[in-house]
Length: 339
Image 1 (cartoon, rainbow, N blue to C red):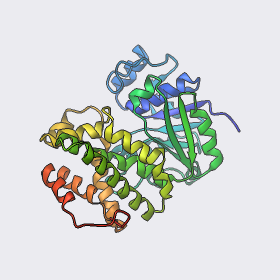
Image 2: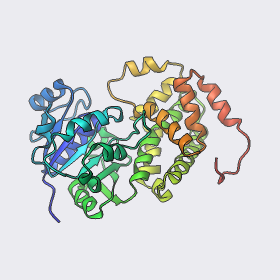
Image 3: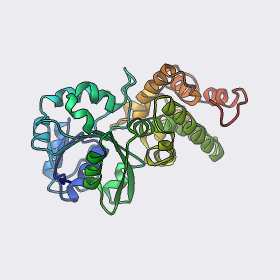
Image 4: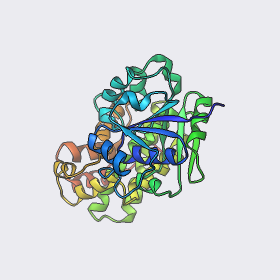
């Protein structure tokens, strides 16, 4: 099995930078593409990303660039870590720069808002057909800040070709970063995307001061919604009880480093969404994903009441307290039923 040596990382947000740092420290040759020229300049001059991952020293071997062509020149693989709402645009620009068919790992935890397509589905549409067997998805409970300072992290890498997945599993693995292989592209991506929606809802519960009982119930019923939609879309239900499912869900719904949970808390305390998002440098993927997830639920005739209520709060002006009361006052149902 040929070792991976050269990787182009597309996207220098917190997660992209943390992954690039991790791979560079392992000894791989990493070129990190950033949209913002000031990020490129800072990484190359001061070995820090002050906008998205401040306070973390990056390896001197990590080179940043604003050129997609430079980022992927001579690469053995591409790690794609841009926000979901610009993924298609960046992929289109990337196509003309590709050195040939190369494996690509998506680490973007989101769903395209306009089409409700998963990131690998967007990639299937935009990238050359010869690359489709080599498209993978990386997901799991992973705060960028913790990975960047060497705290133990475990994630899941899913793909269609078992041998390709195993090559990149070995490339990413270190004693502090454990990677599990999987073949369920749909399930791994859905878990990573929808947990952000549930984190918004969990944040609302915490912002309203409703207590730990309520938050635990929200997380549990949120998982039930994710599993229902996943099964309807052809995912393996077992995936959602693994790292990319319940693992990431619990982390994002309870961790103080979660941007989506923080947005939910502020909503629960009465702040307006526009005000919250206007003051954030990083992207809270759950806001856009909530709309896309509701589209998927309707397309597949799956009932997702939490997703529906968080959409009403985000986009229809519904009060957080009214959304919670409407959830609590729904008709009685069996726990293992459809909803």
